[in-house]
Image 1 (cartoon, rainbow, N blue to C red):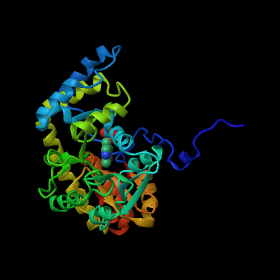
Image 2: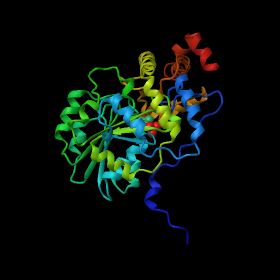
Image 3: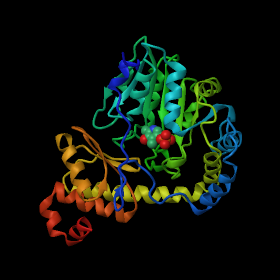
Image 4: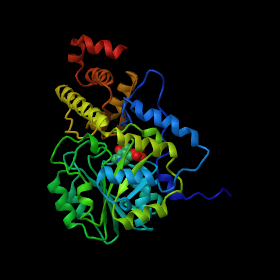
Length: 365
Ligand SMILES: *Cc1c(COP(=O)(O)O)cnc(C)c1O
């Protein structure tokens, strides 16, 4: 007899393989390629001297600093081991066996994975024009719905829902159902029509907003994110979380990053400008890239997605392929983006790529 492992877990994806190799351009995980600011690096080095101690389990100083920075009360903030962990904690805190969550398709995959781990059922609602279809998501609510994930901007499509659509949606969601607005890419938003979720949390008891230090702040490797919600939900998140999940190094780096928020904002503006350049070039090469408000673009290549991903890999560029749907490509530094564009052109529009000597150079590098 073999040892028992839950057989319903067999449908879940296995661990992602590490894809890094020397000379590869990493455009597959939406990291900030510029890395942490020098001032933050200095704080990280200093914080390593206390790694023999457990961290502050409630991240008191970070929460106080976040509260000032975001203009919300500290008891509404829960800090977690990346906001991915907070997605799981939100499900654990609200869903029992047989309950349902609603998420977009495609959207951030971990929502449905964590739902399954909790024994809950994920309902996937197709996007419309690569945008989350909030009307259809509202129509999918049943008696068993506990949680709805609205990823804004949406990963992997990059599109964002506007203020009016979101407010209309929040109006029709019944109060016992929690809406999670995942704003992992908020700092890259340039469209003024896209609402800041934190301005809505105070009036809306069933709303939780997720943010992270992994993307704009460039701290993906340190694992720290946060939720802003009602004080009751923030407390519940700590109850279901792993104790000491956020290291002292991560807490210190996050605080130092808040001190440098201005510099980071300038970096995000640079990423947004590159995003528009990359999207425009891809459209010129014949790919219908939807408007992105994040630090990545979506190539809706359908059945050609896997072929495109392999083509990029042969050009030493790592991208994220969603088989039969599309390919998500992170906006990196200008040189990285140009190398990607050269590879993309030689797939999408081989004739024009041949005519452009710069792209041949980059692709052969
Ligand atoms: C990257 C990402 C996160 C957060 O990642 P962490 O590194 O766990 O903080 C959350 N939501 C979405 C949609 C993301 O793309």
